[in-house]
Amino acid sequence: MLNFKSPKALVFALIIIYNLLAARTVSSQGQLQVGFYSKTCPNAESIVSSVTQKTFERDPGSAAVLLRLQFHDCYVEGCDASILIDKGEEGERKASGNLGVGGFEIIAEAKAKLEGICPGVVSCADIVALAARDAVALVKGPFYEVPTGRRDGKVSSKSLADNLPEVDDSIQLLKSKFRQKGLSDRDLVLLSGGGHTIGLTACFFMQVRLYNFTPGGGSDPAINPEFLKQLKSKCPFQGDPNTRIPLDPVTDFIFDDQIFLNIKNGFAVIASDARLYDDENTKQILESYVSSAVGNSSSSGPLPSFKADFAKAMVKMGNLGVKTGSEGEIRRVCAAVN
Ligand code: HEM
Image (cartoon, rainbow, N blue to C red; front, side, top):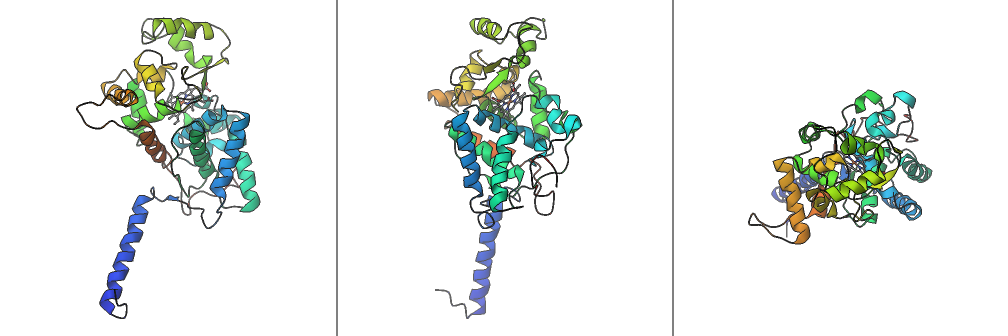
C-alpha cells in the first residue's frame, strides 16, 4: 500500500494520475470525447437515438439520408453542421454537390427536444454525427462510440462546397479530394462503399454513365451487359431525372459488404463506386473486403473486418475540422446561426 503521508508516494501517485489523464486525452479523438454530455445533458444520446429510430420506423429510407448528411456536413468546413444553415440560394445547401441531401428536419426535431431539456448545450454538429451512427446501427451496420463536443460553425456559403466529390470524377480526383481532407484511399473505399450499401440515387446521376460516358460517348464499359439493360430501363435516356433507384440493388436496406462484390462484378450503380476498381490500390483494398465477405483468407495475413473498419473510418471522418472549446457556437436552432 502506498503511504500518502510520504512526499515520495504522493509524487508517485500524482504521476500515475497524470499519465492516466494523458492516456484518456489520447484515446479521445482530438478534442472530442466519448460521453461529452454525460454530465451536462445525460439524455442527449438517447434522445437523438429515439428520434432517429421513430423516424426510421415511419421511413426506412431515412437511415441512408442521415448517413449521407454527415458526409456532406464534414466535407465542407469540417463537421460543424454548416450544411444545416438555411441561407437561401447562396447557402452551402444549394451547392450542386449537395443535390438531394436531406434529413434536416430529423436533426431539427432532435434539436428541439434537446433544447427543451438542456438549452444551449448540445450542438447540431454532434446531433448529425450521433444520428448517422444510430442510422447505421438501424440498418444492421456496426454500432460505434461517437466522440462528441463539436461546436457549430457560423459560415455557410455555396462556393465553399464547390470541391465536393462528384459522381463522374475519375478515381485520381476522388482520391485526391479525400486526401485533401486527410482521408486515405482506404477511407475512400470504406466510406463511399459503406455509404452506398444502402440508399438511393436519382437517375439524374446516372445520365453520363449510361449515355454519355468518356471516352466513347456511350455507356461505361465497367457495367455488366445484362445489368446495363436493367439500368437503362430504369433510367431511360431523357427520362425522369428524379426517378430513384437503389445504390445496392441486392441488399438495399441492409448495411453489408455486398456492395464490394457488386463493384467487382460490374454491378456498381453509380460511376464513383465503379471507379474504385480502376486504381490498383483502391482495387486491392476493395478486394480484401470481398475476400473477407466470402471467407477467403490470403497469404498476406488475417482478413479485415469491413464493419469494424467502417466504424473507425466514420469516427475519423467525424473528426474532420471540428470546432471545439471557444470556437463556433451552440446554435439554438440548427437552420440559423445565433
Ligand atoms: C466518393 C465520394 C462520393 C460520391 C461521388 C457520392 C455520390 C453520391 C450520389 C451521386 C448519391 C445519390 C444522391 C441522390 O440521388 O440523392 C449518393 C447517395 C448516397 N451517399 Fe454518397 N457519395 C460519395 C461518398 C459518400 C460517403 C463518404 C458517404 C457516407 C459515409 C455516402 C453516403 C451516401 C448515402 C447513404 C446515399 C444514399 C442517400 C439516400 O438514399 O438519400 N456517400 N452519393
